[in-house]
Image (cartoon, rainbow, N blue to C red):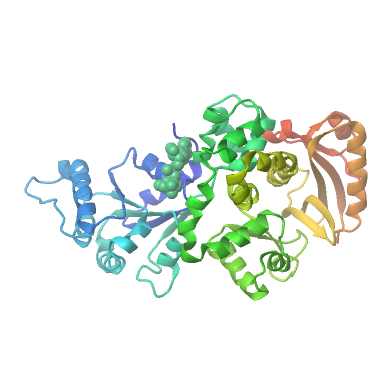
Length: 473
Ligand SMILES: Nc1ncnc2c1ncn2[C@@H]1O[C@H](COP(=O)(O)OP(=O)(O)OP(=O)(O)O)[C@@H](O)[C@H]1O
Ligand SMILES: [Mg+2]
């Protein structure tokens, strides 16, 4: 059953409603749900789904001709010949056909044309420029290798440069959509779900393993998904990323591994990997801007363009987990998976804590803390850190995030420490303090005193709470 993707479908339908032709690119990492999305979109439209397999042009054309006959022959007089001799002939036909009626054509794994017929990109450009104006063709290029797709459409010297009218970058489900998706398939408690989400992220394909593998215990489930000899996701990172980076994948992998292990500044990464700082900088910039596998973070009070205080993190929860626990232990996993798993078990709670902080920041963005925050993020300075800072010109809300069950006494201690750290912040205004814990025993009491007190129960149900008073630092 197809789940969500409402905004993407809305966007696709909007483009569909435009008169004339449009060229739309859908890209996103492997397994994120691109094919499922376009198939859902095509369900109630006249359109063609054409998969670009890495085959001979002639073999592809055989498939495409069959698809065209099946879908479009009703609209055509029987004397029209639908056996195409070249990809160019096919495209010309599609542009002609759509003069009379709207037609959607999807090329899935579009980047594969590069090996099928490299000259096709420039002939497509020529045909498109020449004929699109009189036609009503919605051409959708779907691509899995983010780097390659961007190169094809964004590099100046490439024939299709500037031809894409619209872009959809398909991202994994956010935490709440992933929760809704999994809950529609299997009975699971929120705590276990956060644990599994920290490893699987919002990837529909991986979340589909949960109903089959969830045993009532998230750590056990991860053993069977990632560590066991026949674990289905043990090789997944390699399978998905190797082709993306091509020949030089090892250097990219080393950097992703270092970041997942907590070496997050260029200097730390350079020390860890033994690569020169200059080289690290080049890879970091590529991994961030071009491939989008890393995210560059700065303390929330800093100007992102000016500050030198940067920290990188692996953008995708799945890759973060995979590099941290699987790739990092590759050899040991071959020899003694049990030992690797024992160590994993002791490190996992802290790892989930990191994921919970990111979830908490998203939660705060959706929350109304009594004002509309202009920025929400993490803050750090010389070894001090505040998990969530949300602020506008007058108001500041600070949160400590704990992946633990807090007793009333623990909660007081956490708030006290938070107030001390608040004095280090370069922000002036009305301060509010809060906690986002796994479970918070004294939640009601704290709220009555004006604190922003939440636990997983609120987070997972997105239950907001607006306090009445604020406290000074
Ligand atoms: N919105 C969704 N609702 C339900 N299931 C989904 C959804 N999106 C994807 N899936 C499922 O997840 C799996 C992976 O999706 P899909 O094959 O569409 O990904 P993809 O991005 O095309 O991946 P690849 O790059 O490997 O081709 C499929 O089994 C699909 O049915
Ligand atoms: Mg696909």
